[in-house]
Image 1: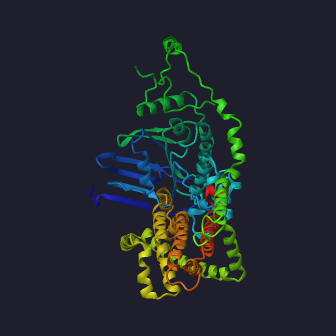
Image 2: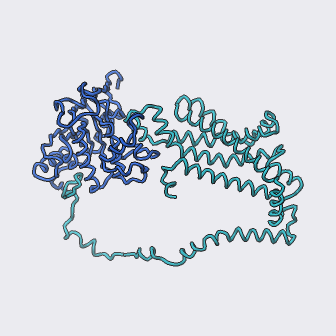
Image 3: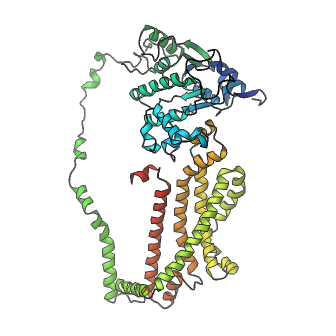
Length: 268
Length: 300
C-alpha cells in the first residue's frame, strides 16, 4: 500500500456561497450536489480487503443508511469519513464541517452535560444558552447541569446527538447509535433523528444492522457486500415510515436477501 | 405497533412442533426454593447490629491485657510502659508544648517534601505521558532510579546536605516522586482512546484536547499517586528523623528511647499513626473537591 496513491481530501462548503450553519429547509440546492464522494476506494486490514474499488456518493441533505453483515466494513467506512481511519487507495471527499455519533455516547465524564454539548464550539460561542438550545432539541433542556454518569443510556445518546448537531454539520455520521438501546427505547430517538435531520438537513450516513430502522429513516439504503455496494435501494415510502405495508415488506425482503438472510425458513 | 428484530427472519428460530417434545418434558424437574434465602431472618441482621461492638472486642481485650500485664509487674516499664503512663506522658508533653512543637516541625518537613516530590512527579508524568520524546527521555531514567530503596540514600544526603532539615526534606521528596510519577503517567496514557477519538472528530486543538479531555480524566489516577505518596512521605519522615534529628517527633522519640522512656516512645508512635489518619482524610477531601463527577463520590 503505497502512500502515493492515497488521497484524502476535505472540501469546505461545496456550494461556496452558503454560509456554514444556515441551510434552511426548502431552499435546498440542487439535490445532485454531493456532500460525500468516494471513488475507487480500497482499504485492507492485514490480508483482509474491507473495501475494494468502492464508490459511494451522498447528495447534500440526503439520508443514507448503510447496511452490511457484521465485519463487512460498515464501521470502517464511517471511520474513514470521520478521518479516524485512512484509505489505502482512492479518493474521498467529505465536508470539513461534520459530526459523529458513536455506538456509545462517549460523553466526557468530567464535564457537565452542557459543557459536553459545547465541546465542538470555539470558546467565544460556548454559552449555556447555546447548549440549552441544542439540548432542548433533544428534549433534555433540564439536564444541562447533570453529570454524564447520572444519565440513562438513551439520554446520554441524545446528549451525544445534541453535541453532534450543535455546530450544524453538513455531514452527520451515525455509527449504530441506537444499537445499545432496547427495541422499545430505540423508537423515540429514531423519530428524533428523523425530525432533526428534517430540520437541519445535514447529509446523513447511518450505519446500522437493523433493516427496519434503515427503511424507516433513510432516503436510500446501501448494502455493503464484499467491499462493494451490493445493493443501492431508493426508499420510496412516506416518512417517517410506519414500518408496515406491502412496499415496505418488499424492500425489506430485497435487503434481507442481499444480506444473506433468507425470508422463508431455512432448510434444516 | 409491532417491534420486530430484523436480524432474525421469522421462522428461523425453529419452533419445534409440540409432538416432538414430550420425552424431554417427562423427566422429573428438581425445583429449588430460592425465596427462602432472601427472607432469611435473624443471625446476619443480629450480627450487623452489634458489628461495632464485635470489632472493638479484640482491641479492647488487647488493651486490657496490656494494662494488666504492666500494672501487675509482669512486664517492666523499661520494656513497655502501661497505657496509663503513656496517657500521662502524652498529657505532660502536650502541657509543656513539646509535642505540639515537635509535631509542627515534623509535619512541616513531611508536607514540604511531599509538595516538592509530588510536583516533580506530576510534571515528569505529564511530560512522559503527553510527549513521545518526553517518555523516551524521562521514563527509563525514572524507572531505573525507582529501584533504589530511598532509605539507602540517607548517608549520601547527610554528606551532601548536612544534618538539618534539608536532607530530610530531600529524602521525603525523592521518595514521593515515584508513586506520583507512575500514576500520572499511567493516568495520562490510560485516558479512554474513544474520548480522544471524539476530540479528533470534532477537530479539537491539541491544547484543548489536553486541558478538556486528557488532564481531567487523568486526575483520578494522579490523586491515587498522591495518596500513595502521602503514606510514603510519613515513612520517609520516620526514617529520616531517626538519624541526626535535633527537633521534631523523631528527635523526641529517639531521645526518649535513649532514656528508656517507653511511654514517650509510644506517644510518638501513636502520633505518627494519627498523622497517617489525617493524611488519608485530606486525600478524601481532595478527591471530593476535585472529582465531583465521579459516580462513587456523588453517591457517598
